[in-house]
Length: 94
Image: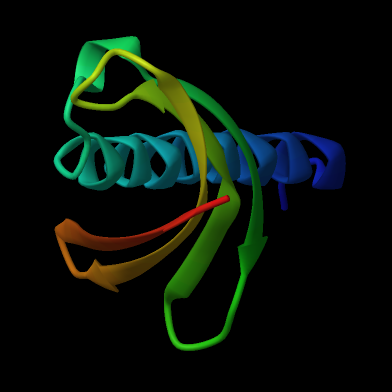
């Protein structure tokens, strides 16, 4: 049998990869809805839910059509569809 600490380290590394993919999927889903995606600055946290669904919450600061920077709350749901992740971002202006 393998070393339990090594196995735990491998699990942590695998989880870090999943978290990175989930956050990237959420950022992409969010920027698709912004007027000036290159101006986006993100803050976030993540929690897992059952059935392969993960939720990322936080906020994004981004410019509107007039160039003013506005903050919107984000709730992004990410579903694991085998080899793909599907992300749905919901933005609520503050």
